Image (cartoon, helix red, strand yellow):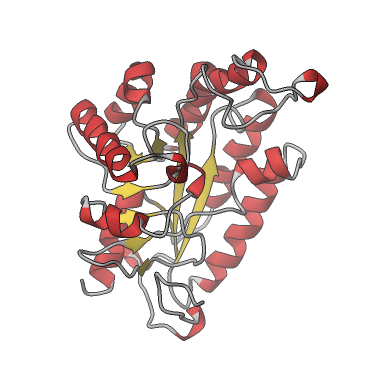
Length: 289
């Protein structure tokens, strides 16, 4: 069956989209900040358990994740702060309670909090996904003063009903559908929902945890991705996402390559850094909504 959530559209035949200041490309940086429950199997693993067993607690793999919260996140933040780039934080809402200082610093920096479930568990495994979405939004609202405008499912997972529920609950944009280089309206039963381009290709989970590339890959891939989108952006604006996880890109042997991405991009006129909701507001205005 065709995509039930959007009409097919050839990107080279669409009406021209123009960014503020006639920029060519909007770059947004996403840091995925998650809550892994030490009492459950880990969301991901770097070290297999001997004898092929599954253990709880899984100390080495939990520690891998926890390093990201204690060290890796702050390394990423130093890089972005030095470049003056605001991040969008894809946030498991439980982090507001388990690592409140981290979330407080994001709010102080004016970074955007994007709903990412309550804990790092796919919506398909939840008994009541609407309750999880509501609880996630309310927790973030109570902690930060504002409910999230956007949503990214843990693992980008959705059920067939998720977009309808998100729109009904007041979410304005979603990042699960990595199928375009421009925003587009999604088909929902009521209200409205916009898909903002996220990425599987420029995402440190596939790059390092799945494909096992060397540390420079994130810079080399970002440079090449940017070059193409920047060139195409002369015809119509493009959106480029850079997706990171603190326990992966925030380690010592990768952080300099993350830093190099922004040194490279900042050489080009017409490249602007935006948060997810900035892209949404621009697109809604540009599309005449």
